[in-house]
Image 1 (spheres, rainbow, N blue to C red):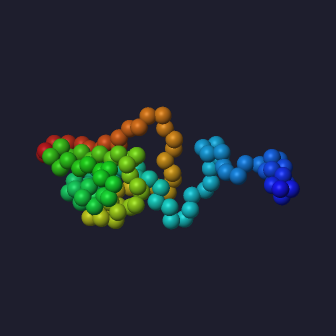
Image 2 (spheres, rainbow, N blue to C red):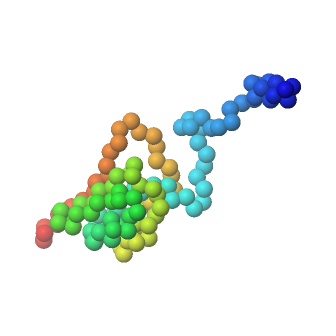
Image 3 (cartoon, one colour):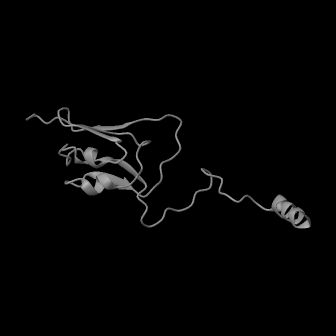
Length: 116
């Protein structure tokens, strides 16, 4: 019983056991995938392989309108889409996603050229 009181007193005067995220952040690790920032629309051929390979179904590719949409809140950051892309146009950073007040989709499209 006295052991319990010594634990209580020790924990009462000790600091917090966790970080005060988002105010105190740790550095990212060397091989962290982080988040998908988007694609390079000039390189992308809109083949849809990233959409088919994505286990979270967070990517939507429309070849007709040449648009690519990502729901970053469904993404599990596995990197399968980046590895499967034949043109290597999907960009991932090693930074974690910042907290937000509103969920938004990431949509990118290819700018129409005069020949199209």
